[in-house]
Amino acid sequence: MSDLLIDTETILEITHTFWGAFLPDSGDLHPGSALPSTEDLRGCVRISGSWEGVVELSCSLAVASHVASRMFALPEEQLSDADIHDAVGELSNIVGGNIKSLLPPPTSLSIPFVETPDTRSASEEDWRFSSALDSEVLLAWHDEPLIVRVWRSQGSSADSAAPTAGSDGDLEAELSS
Amino acid sequence: MRALVVDDSRAMRSLLRQILVKLGVTDVIEAEDGVVAVKLVEGGPTPDLALVDWHMPVMNGLDLVVELRKRKEWRHMAIMMVTTESEHENMVRALLAGANEYLIKPFTADAVVEKLSLLGLHLEPAQVGETDGGAS
Image (cartoon, rainbow over all chains, first blue to last red; front, side, top):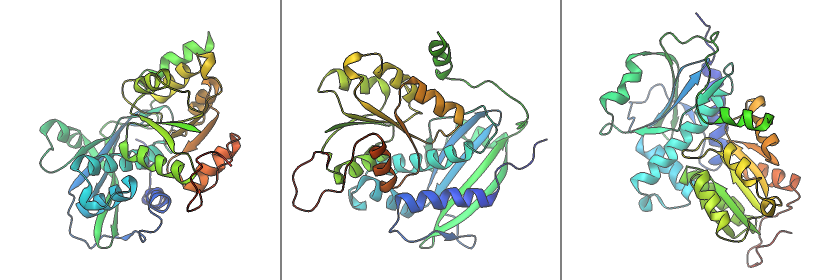
């Protein structure tokens, strides 16, 4: 069995780094453990390889809209649902990618997928049934929740060196030829 | 100067465009994956700069870099990876494939400026009232 590889302090640092870099004038993120959970949107990325699991970033619509407004340089009232989902997906991609960088190689990162309470399907929920919550960080921005969770697939081990999938493997052969 | 931004996230493409425009680069074209990027480059003036994400559907950023470096007429294009991919081995792969610089997400606008200066592109925020979109 592997030790906890991604502690909450690390997740905090990654999330604060993103927030400070992309939303420098938005005010800080604070511990949000006392907030009611309004996880309107959930952006997820899968990590595969020597470590298997999902990094999930959940937030309220207010947080998501603010992030999207800044990234698209649009007033919130002009944002579409697709804009907001895209921003949440990219946010989860960045947090997940930075977490992935801390894991023992080789690992690969999926394209992010974004869920809402209405769009969560049974198949999307499947990965939770076969996962254990490794770490959870509860943050708040103006009393609105921003939560990062790391789910480890059951049976995942940091010691195994599973081959990664994807087209990148073809490049190695090409470069060496 | 003409810049190409390749990322499957519209939000990220928008953010990068904003940074480039503030630096005076107003000719910015966008693509959501490597295939679209190649078609854009084939169909117009060759960009001077390409900002390329790694993880994209259809054709990822690494394969795009390989493709862009195949053509002699495109070899003057500066290519900077803009990605969360920070494994040393993968960074080396990108540079061996032909990327000139590497920027890890998240990044600040200052980090973009610094990286672009390493590429010989010394850009400064455009002053209010200026209309020249060229590099300084």
